[in-house]
Length: 68
Length: 159
Image (tube, rainbow over all chains, first blue to last red; front, side, top):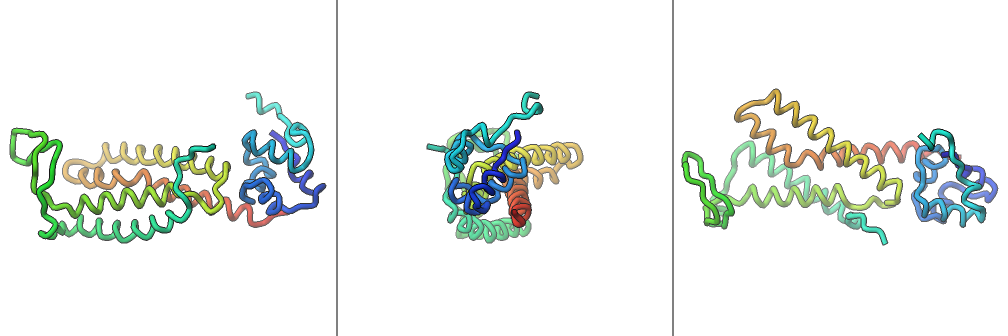
């Protein structure tokens, strides 16, 4: 699954640490998501959408490999 | 909302504080077979199978040195505190790493056990059994701490 957390973060001009605080997770988790190493839970994904004030599908996109 | 079977973060240091001395004392009493007589007690036993005796008994009082019981309980409880206390910033990703490490530790522990089944015999196997009581959690602690430190390193350079 691809995500545009880094892009959205840049738009909002906040650091990983600041986003982590807003989303109530550790900075490592934000970092791991941006690197595509971790797929967040639905709850965390919804939190991020609310923080960035966008639809969840604008942040997260399925890839072909997600159907395997 | 979430039931995660974890203790608060502060229990981790309490766990280490108890685990290290009790493991050292436990190991040395095991090696030197230290059984101080003031810890000899009559204790209730569910099942008794004495050496050199054919009859097995149930629900009896037996005389036993309780030092190894005390140390065993302390080691298990403190290992649990170290293994299952929350990290300072426990979140869903850390939990995922935690449970992956636990699965890894179970596999690793039983792989080692199979090897010892095959290559360690007789009385020496008793030592394997003694250590194997604690190794699942010890392997977990090592694996999990390593994964967390790797995570912290990888996240230390950002932007």
